[in-house]
Image (tube, rainbow, N blue to C red; front, side, top):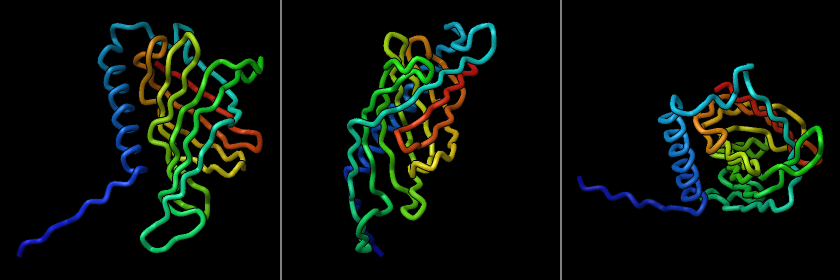
Amino acid sequence: MNSTRTIHATRASIVLVCTATVALALAACGGASQSASPSASGANGPLTIHLRLKPTSDTYVSVGSLSGCTGSCQGDYLVGNDPLFDATTNKQVGTLVYVEFLVDPGDRLFHSPGNTITLTGRGQIVFSETLHDDQSGRAATGAILGGTDEFLGATGFVISRSTPVGGDFVITITN
């Protein structure tokens, strides 16, 4: 029996593949040179960075579904490139670029396979997370996949929260 499958690529799936590829490449590059670069956490233990996000350019894209979903549908996505501020000084220190794919519309559960935090003059940190983007303040913990410059070879985690005024990120770099 001869069967043929048709593959439909949506913009969301293409963005997902590209984002995941970049995140994996950064993680691989970071891991390969980890022993050659000094530890991002320094000699005194883990490095913690506390940032606040103030959304300015978020775009929600509804891709709908084959089952006729209307409103917020599984597979919809949110794209953003927003400023990040030091939580203590409230000065802008970088940006967050991300794509969040809606996994559970009823619970506002999103998956972000490769968020990129760029800290001006320091480098980038790439992490993956699954979070409730409902402004409830529920914590989500995501794994750091890698980084550049000061954060080359970084490992650790990011605890993020969606808040009524944006987002809150506590980055802990363990290596």
